Figure 1 (tube, rainbow, N blue to C red):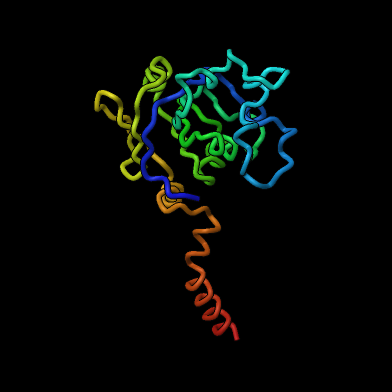
Figure 2 (cartoon, rainbow, N blue to C red):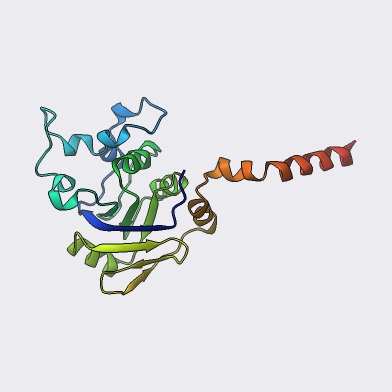
Length: 195
């Protein structure tokens, strides 16, 4: 994982509500354990037409949504079954942050564990973001705020451990491995005390 400290991008908007993980990446594509290449499968059934060509009606296929790293999603984004492939696909597609007034808890946790910034904002802030696609935003993970085009800020909170992992570019296993020496010393001391 790469450290996530600051994201600066225009926003792309998917205003539909209740976009579930099967819509993010259909279950038939969950046969891999690698992340590479999942971006082309992201929103597959919505993004492509039956002949494999781009669906011109899909919002992220619009020219103004190209290269946007911040996705403003409709309420209850990421609902449905738990699958790490959903954040993997979004990250491989180029999305680095998802902003919404309500994110499914399991999706949010999976996203943060995999380096995808998943932020909840108030309903009023969410409405403004939905109504202003293409807005230039800067997300500061250390400061826990989103800077708006007019210089205003939206504060957000991340669970401290998730924030630490994002800022240092480690997942849960990587965090534990950073403390391997201390864990080994503790185990040795504990074994000596028992013996």
